[in-house]
Every structure is written in structure tokens, then in C-alpha cells.
Length: 409
Ligand code: HGY
Ligand code: MN
Ligand code: MN
Image (spheres, rainbow, N blue to C red):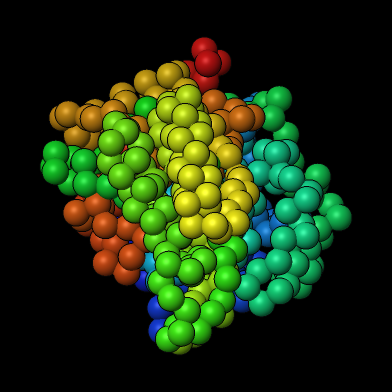
């Protein structure tokens, strides 16, 4: 079977593994992740790798090579709610296939090859992204273990129930002294490559992110009897803030800001809302710009609180700095890509990736793969088989170039 057909079959198989019956949702340490790890683990073994699952649930395939160095390839197997087939899974399928190809080539590999399927890049279940890669990079915050999901289960209980060990997350830390680098292939999740007619592209940097939770505390009341000028309506305050966030992002070049989640109490049609909880996601390639935008939004929040006599509070849940890709690894990725595509674009990633965390412990590079109309985080996510084949060829050529030149890194 050719690689593209195998990849399509494997992505479809992963797409059928979900925590929800009607749509693809595979969350950290859930039943879907267990089955996805089993399936991807079987592919790693087929590729000639030894396989282990670490204490947080990362799946790690190891292909021994000569020498002490290790190249790490990977992406994530968790998804958002109602996800597409390719975000994360494509990078894992490509990495396993690249390892299999390097083994089948018969040429001895001058470094070991690890493939990691990270346990939680999206952060959907516990509102804290990159749990798997943070554990692997040694930057996991143990206080996160006490976070509770929507059902009230703590992260540590979820890890234990999954078969992991929350008391031994230090053991997830990768050996970095001999790590050549981390390279991730991932769909672009934007329209740039599609508009340019390019199958693959090179990533220059990954945007920094601020994820926050905003609480609005107003006063419940009867929808029919409380006069409009005497209300402390938490939902109206939140609605005003949401539009201010949109305006701030529209007016700040390069800023993306999103309020994706909202919870309203008591959530009854005839009661003035008393409590609202809102998520906020702010991103920019330049950290100073992102931080300045957050400062301005905090001022807006305080002004709304005063004018509406609402208590508002901002809780920063997670901050991830903008990270540049390794010039040396990217140059090799560029050389490999130009063998398969006459022109090559280099573009920043507005989306976050485990690569942003791995950049903290090793040189990092990313290969973007075109996705139709840039649609992602949606079941309409779509990648052409020939683009998957192109990405595979680039990744194999990159690993081959690295095998020839790794001493010069
Ligand atoms: O949200 C993101 O940027 C990524 O898809 N987790
Ligand atoms: Mn995603
Ligand atoms: Mn992703």
C-alpha cells in the first residue's frame, strides 16, 4: 500500500475514535485517548519501534540509531470538540511513517528517532494546554493537578484513571543533552498555503498566547419587574466586554483575540443573569504587543465594572511566549521541501503547537501542510492525499539530510 493510502486509512481510523458518539472529540486522559494510543502504538511497533506510555499519557515510540543523539518527531492525538481528522493526528501519522521509511531504507541511522504522540495539546478538558509536552519538557506546573474538569474530576484523578501516575510526572522529562531537535508537521489551520497553491510551507515562529478566565458577578432579579436602570446584569457586562475584545483585535495589527466559552448563571430566561464566566484567548507574534493588548483589555474590564456596578475579575490561566523556529533545522527543512515544491513560503503560526513548548528544550522546526480554505477545529478540515504525500517526502528527505549533516549542527 502506498503511503498516502495508508495515511488516509490511519487518519480515518483515528477519526472514528471519539469520546462522543456523534462527533470527533478526544480529550486528555479520556477513553478515546486510550484507544488512540493503543492504535498509534501498534503502528509504531509495526514501524519497528519500541513503545511506551509515560506517566502523563504521552505515547513514545523509539527507534534506536548509532551514536548518542536523538531526533524527536511528533504532534498530538487529543482534539478539540467536534474536531477534524487532521489537527495533530496528521503529524503523528507522518512521524510514524517517516520512522518506518528510515528503517526500511536499510541505511544505518546515525541518531535515534523518537516519535511522540502528545497527550494534551488543546487543553480542552482542563483549560490548560500542552500538558503532555510540558511534562516532556519539564515545564509542567504541578498545581495544575488540582484543576477540575466539567464533571469535577481532578487532573490527578484523571491521570491515575488513565493508567498514568501524577506523582511521577518528573519521569516524563526527556533527556535533552543529546536532543538534535524536535520537528512537527501540522496542518496550517489557515488559508495562506491554500491561496498560494502550495502543498507545504515552513513555519518561522509560533505566536505567544494568553489564556484567561473572566468572572462577572452581578445581581439576579426578576426579568419582568426590575427596572432597566436598576439592573446589575452580568451577561450584558460580558457582552459589552466581548465586543470590546473584538474591536481591540480589529484595531491592533497582528492581534487575534477570542472569547470562545461562556457560562451563565442561573441561565433562566426570566431571571437577570447574576454570574458569567468567560474565556479569553489573546495571541500575537510579538509578546510585547500581546501583553499591551491584555493591559488595555484589563482597563476596559475595570471600566465596565464601574459603569455597570458589576464585580469583574481577570484570572490568567496560561501564558506561552512567542517562539522562533531553529534557523539551522528550518534551513534543512527548506532544502528538503524545495526538492518537492518549486517555491516555498515561510509563515508564522497563529495556532499554538506542542512545538512551542519543545522549543524550550531543543531546536524546533515545523512544516505546515495545506488544508482546504484554512478550515480547522471543525469536521470540514480537509487535506488532499497528494499534500500528505508531499509532506511525507519532505519529512523523509529532511531526516536523511540531517543524518548526513547532524555533526555540523
Ligand atoms: O489553540 C490552538 O492554537 C491550538 O490549535 N491548540
Ligand atoms: Mn488545535
Ligand atoms: Mn494542533
